Structure formats: structure tokens, C-alpha cells
Image (cartoon, rainbow, N blue to C red):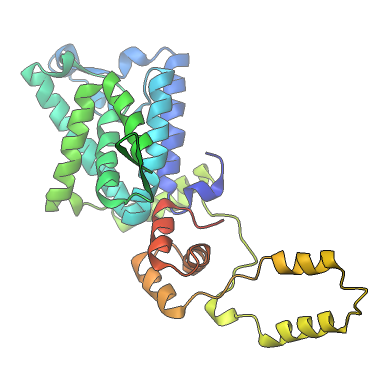
Length: 309
């Protein structure tokens, strides 16, 4: 989780993965768990503690097992969704889904559903994000194992089922909210204001550290293709060697040497830059080179965040 390249173009996901464990730890150390759950009575009807409406979504799960499952599902599901949506739309998605889940939980409390209380952990909005991941992120591979179809996303579904087993009602509300977000235009048009984004980038973004991948100097851009003179000079120097110098070992080494990455096609780079405007030119070129010029595989790498860094 500390790797900067793992959260490339996913600063909100990194912030959530810092916030949830930190709040879970603080509530345990300072014995604040009695103040993070929500009940209809006495919290809302008698004491009017409206701040409790926010706490279940902003604090981490109470147990270490639920926290581990939550962080694993969040890491693998929220990063590609944020890269597809963009950080601003993803922030609006989180706010909309958390608000709708909170309203549904309060309605369930009024109707006497869900056990009569809302626990901390943010399970509702997490499953709403998981639904977006299910709908917009494709599988990178699939295999038939003992007659069962397994994909690259299967093990995330298994982790989500384990988490849903411990909190089934918030999980169901989250999936319902995720579908409402995809089908409701007022919800999926919600965005934070530009001023709020500017303030967040200025004051909050430095707190989570860098999210850029390490720079690679061996990237071959379309405009920086290696000149033919370099290969000619290398061939001339190799031909100038005496037969004694070109031993069998050096010949075998030259045959197995990895060639320099071929430059990506300019048309493919422009097409992928239009599809992923936040990824950057170097990330697009890197994904194409890692995919040997295959555009479909490059798209899957960009969605999964695997750009070869």
C-alpha cells in the first residue's frame, strides 16, 4: 500500500485506505466505539445527535478481520473505478452513495429493519463502489476449473462475500445504491465544486503523499524512435571484431539479448489518450509497449493500473 505506483491517478482511494484503518485504531484506543454507531432511539429521536449520521460511513470497521477485508476490497475495486471515472467524478460518486445509503439506513431504522442499529465501517458505500467496479471494469482473464468459470475478479467477489456475511444488510443497501447511481441521472451528475477541488489539492493532497509511479527512462516515445545510425554503428563494431573475439558465448548472448521496445503507433497513442485523459502520454505509451502494440490489452492494463512501472 505504500507503493506510489499502486495509487497512480487514485488519490481518493489512497486517502480512504489511510482514513479507515486510522479511525478504526483511534476508536479502539480511546474507547470511542459507543459513539460511532447509530440507533433511532435515543440518538435521533430523543437526543437529536445528528452528527451520528456521518460517523458510520467515516469510521473504519470495529474488528480487525472486517478491516482487513474492507481494505482489500477497497484497494482492488476502488482504484480502477477512480481511474475510469476520474477523481472528481469518483468523489461525487462516494458522496452520493454514502448519502443515499445513510437515508436508506435511517428508513430501515424507522421500519424496524436491519437489527435496529447502524454499525461503523462504511460497508454500504463500499458495496456501492464494488457495484461500479463490477459494471465498468472488465476481467483480464478467465479459466474453467472443475467445471466452474473463474476470472481475474473472482477472488475479489469471494472477499466481498465474506464481508457481506458479517454485515449483510448494509451490503444489500450498498448494492441497491450502486444500481441507483448508475440508473439515476441526478445522482451520477453530482460533482464537488472546482473551488473545493482546489482547496483539497492544496491542503489535503500533500497529506497522503505522492501517487505518481517511478519514472522510467527507457520509454520509447513515437517521436523519439531510435535512429538507424545507432544500429548501423553497433553492427559495424560487431563486424570489426576478430573471429577469436566473437566467441560462442558472446554470440549466444547477442541472440538472447532483449531488443529495445518498439515505438508505439501515434494513432493508437492518440486514441488511448482520448479514452484515458488523466493517464498521461507516458503511461499510455508504456501500456502499449507492455502489450506489444495490442490496443485491447493496453486498455485492460490502463483500467487495472498495470502500466509496467
